[in-house]
Length: 445
Image (cartoon, rainbow, N blue to C red; front, top):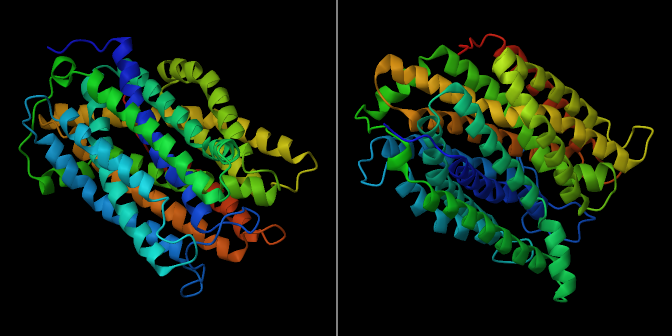
């Protein structure tokens, strides 16, 4: 019988998500902006921006390729974790091995071989992106598989998912500080090249992320708080069982649409600020802090409503609200009000549905996994999370690729149609996800 996870350990568990979020959002927030900068950014062009076949640009192909390699690695690392007989547990030892490589590759992505347009930068970005995605996956798949093992009841799952979500949004807010930190470093240490200052800021934040990853590994005794045992089911059979689960498939399809949309927001925020509204890029940090603070207000409400009316209804309403937010992105800069009022209002409104969509999906998936374990008498937690993250990564790949491709149709002040098109795409995707999730069958406990 495992011990109940105390509050201090729940917070320690959240640090792992915070560290992963810092690193992954450094990629999401500034990768495209760094390698395909708008003209008013003060950054050099590092790779060619020529469109291939008229629609694909190089950054879209590189990010898609890196994510696809990583996505196919997910089931492998899940199988390794689920079948592990390590004396210290199935999850923590694997997570520990992933921390240093994640830190190294996250930093190297932002150190191109040449500080001007070069084909070598394309090769460098491809290799370092794949290295980072594989390393971070080795941490996050076992990490997420711990959730249903550490939280036995539905209420426990929502509670631990809430702490996990808090870690995630704090990670987003921290990563969004990168340009503020860049400005501080550039002025404090009199660094002439903005790219160099940005690189030092990335290293500092990546180190902070790695430290957070380490806190979870050191603080949680897996053997003490989890009683799950290794399974011997072959990978092919485990995947087949997962894909036969109708509720899981509905969850995955809705989740897939949602993550394409969210990736468009994170990839496009700096463009929305600097191009559509012509505001300074450093405002991104303040917007993220606003979103975090507003979403925190709604966390207790989400926990209360999840108990009273169930998770499904909250998720559907949240997706519909988020689709409306995306429609607002299309009209940014055209509303009859101050640009700052426009973006702050939109971000504050977005924080409401994002509060529930950050908490509830992992709790829902944990319940799907728990039911499967009861039905099949086999523990395949990591396999389910691997399949989920496979599609999340494909969705993120689509999101970054689509956003980058749309930039071909306008990414600068006065020529911004490509950026606005992403608002329409996000609206369609979130609304479609809400319709799909109507068919999900929730088991109330």
